[in-house]
Length: 149
Image (cartoon, rainbow, N blue to C red; front, side, top):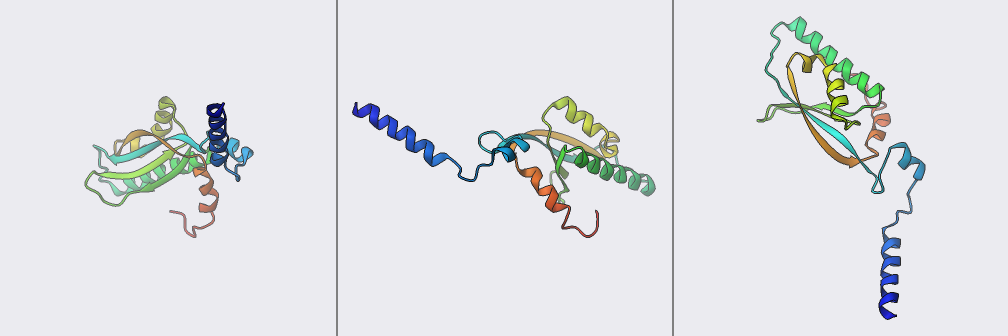
């Protein structure tokens, strides 16, 4: 009997300690959060590829297309984070965090990027588990820049 009572108390107090008093079920559903407030994403590392466009006009056009594709992915709620990396020994040039985990869909989304299509960048795909609330920063981010990159 003592054992049963002890186990019951442990289970009761263990569960009560772990509960979040700020939990918002509708927000968790909006961001597709699991019970830990997390979800799977795809981290894309953009590495220097095999192709280098020497013509400045063509290169500028390719990078304009790269930025347009990033903006498109934000508009369709697939791009969560994008940005360049500082110079490094691994030749990593930038990162994306995509709200997509299906490998075929990811390759399709990346195929629309002219810098990837031409080989200026080579994407490396890594499945990542992070906060489901990560996309919430986009609304704030859109209010703090004065000049679009």
